[in-house]
Image (spheres, rainbow, N blue to C red):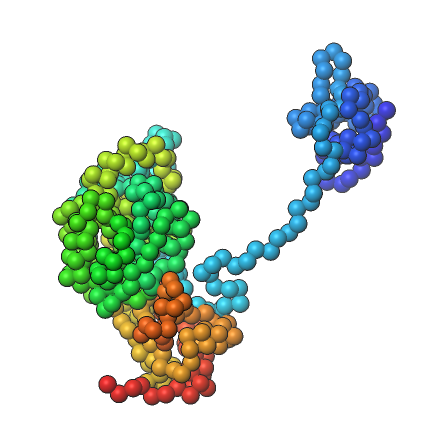
Length: 479
């Protein structure tokens, strides 16, 4: 008869019995085909209830340690391996690429937005409305391209805000642009040669490479992506951000835009992926026309996201496909399920269609405009004249800070890191290390002001000023 001490505090009796019997089986003390006591006899022997023994036996049977044979009883199963699984050792993972290390208490170049400005009360009310009035829609899976109501709302917003006349059927909604890039790779083909901007956003390179795409790079001049370098690259597809290039902030003029559209129209398999990630935040006037809106040959794929304009945790992005590609997407990839929950889709649709999104954008433009002026004043106050120059741009949520110092970009970053601050240089975003030496971008640093706390900023600007002073900054060169 099996006899066990079932005295562990806080552990159910059936679980203690199950663990004891399993330990005997794995240690070989109970060999295969050994008959186990009946539930009643084991319960009487241990002084516990029959239901407790039954629960323990059921767990052993479900895991394959014990077999129940009708009218014969319970028997130890013939388990191939009797070794207990090894305990999993704790693994310390390295920090995620691109994130500030734990010791960085302040980030000059971080991508945070002003989440405290998000209209939570309005969003919560619209969500409650969706839960109350759209029970049938919420219980049904949305179409693979997204809920039609949201796509209609996005189409209306694009028409009024970006002068883009698109049909809702051309819009594909997804949980983040990374997911949409994966769909584009399948739609356009991994065998195509994709061209990225150099310098550019490293995460794009990682996404395309992990997706199996063949990559090449084209450099920039004062007008943005070089059309000559694009032609010589041999690429069929180019990914660019003409309205506010990251990280340089360049806004592409109309002449260069038409050059790129002419390149795309020269071959049937050429496409431009237009990333319009923060176009809503142009500080003066309306955003510039998109490539999509001036494309006469259906060669531009438009991408945008709500993570910048709302909050990063709302992982809703969308792309607008040319009509021909939209039909092809429906034929070839229409089987995919939509990756955004119906709750969020109907809430966002109401947020846009009732005018709350436009009001929010206008409010945020004013907020970021005032904050930008405060930060420029802090820069003038904290950094001595001639030490820095701000390269401004009317678009987006970052500008470039040009430091007039004898320190290399790496030395500036290292000395700030030693004081608990992180900053990214434009040279960090070049594809090849060899590109950094010859290009006139040394001494340029990314200054993303959207989520900065002004008190912390003032503190670390003074830290930066001391670092530059200790390095004997030279006066600006005369022009």
